[in-house]
Image 1 (cartoon, rainbow, N blue to C red):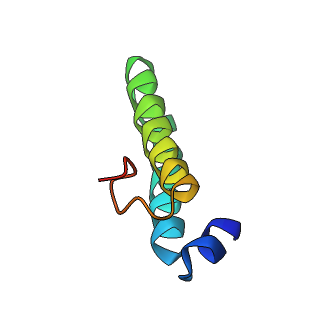
Image 2 (cartoon, rainbow, N blue to C red; image 1 turned 90 degrees about the vertical axis):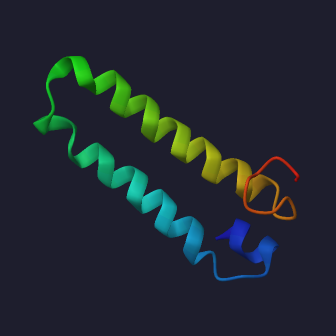
Image 3 (cartoon, rainbow, N blue to C red; image 1 turned 90 degrees about the horizontal axis):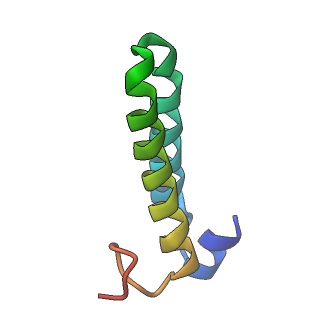
Length: 66
């Protein structure tokens, strides 16, 4: 886990956030097809946020430097 090494922590919070986002994909098959896009977009946003935080380890918890 490169991001965890950069941050100086074990990265568990990031791992949990990613796992939670991916678990939301497991439920897609149970949703009506018109709801799939919304679910994919929500997961994409969650993963993008996690990656943004990993790219900016000194930016705090919101990923935008504040």
